[in-house]
Amino acid sequence: MNTNKKNLFVTIAGRANAGKSSLLNALVGEKIAAVSDKPQTTRTKITGVLTKGEIQYVFMDTPGMHRARNKLSEHMINTVSETVTGVDVILLMCDCTKKISENETDLIKNISGEKSKVILLLNKIDLLENKDRLIEKLAEYSGLYDFEEIIPVSVLNGEGLDLLMEILEKYAGNGPHYFPDDKFTDQPEKVIMSEIIREKALMNLNEEVPHGIAVTIESLNEREDRSGTPILDITATIFCERESHKGIVIGKGGSMLRKIGQDARADLEDFFRIKVNLQCWVKVKEGWRNREGMIKNFGLS
Ligand SMILES: Nc1nc2c(ncn2[C@@H]2O[C@H](COP(=O)(O)OP(=O)(O)OP(=O)(O)O)[C@@H](O)[C@H]2O)c(=O)[nH]1
Ligand SMILES: [Mg+2]
Image 1 (cartoon, rainbow, N blue to C red):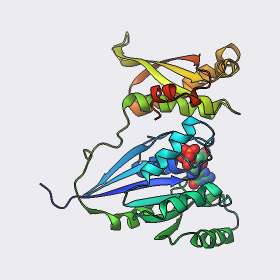
Image 2 (image 1 turned 30 degrees about the vertical axis):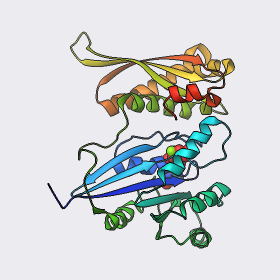
Image 3 (image 1 turned 180 degrees about the vertical axis):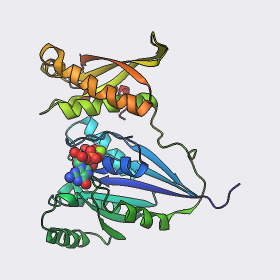
Image 4 (image 1 turned 90 degrees about the vertical axis):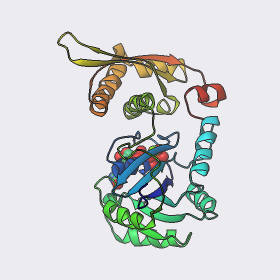
């Protein structure tokens, strides 16, 4: 047994749209979590693993804090509470261009009882024209909690991320690697596939439609095309909450569904490194975000 092994469990939490999933992807170096400009993109805990020499970092991305509006929201908020419990480090991620929200102060109250080290990340510094705003933000957040460290970052530009890793390294403690060293997520393949498709739906759709989207993978089949090239057939269903939304997801003459499919196929081919043939269907599940059975079926509880 290698006694030099170390590990560190890190939860990324914060308001919706702060850049938590972008950070997870950047730290792990793989696109594991869906990212979009719509709040409440992440719905479950997503684990990303990074093994660097003797240290294995286990990063857990969580849904953004928001006011619960339906049963799905309640599950998402519970996930945050569960995932900030008992970890070594909590990365509290905020958007330095936004005012401190009640959701953030509630979250800070929630984690103040934990023994974990709490590091504040002031994200999106690339958007700040006046850098004095950063000092103001620093002072505002420092008044709320005695953070172990406060690091201004731009996940978009990679600014501050080396410093973050240098700091995290110091907190790693002796212990086993719970994941194989070459593994970077515990997300099953089908979940990664459905999240890629959902991300493209979020990117392309507007108003209230994206929030009611869920995606399931119905079938997978690997074969060779006529020239002998391996090809993966994927059949997916995009669920939405209303008949009127179904029309929007399909679009005029099927144009929206085609666009979502094309965008998703490109990412699926990149991620799985195989040619993909993707077929998407659209179905309505009336008000599914308030139906426990459906939430469970979609793997969200
Ligand atoms: N300008 C700028 N945009 C960023 C940065 N980091 C993330 N974003 C953008 O912010 C938006 C939200 O990013 P996500 O990573 O999905 O945010 P999140 O905190 O996971 O959001 P939820 O899952 O909804 O809670 C996306 O459009 C990102 O591209 C940054 O450093 N600068
Ligand atoms: Mg997210």
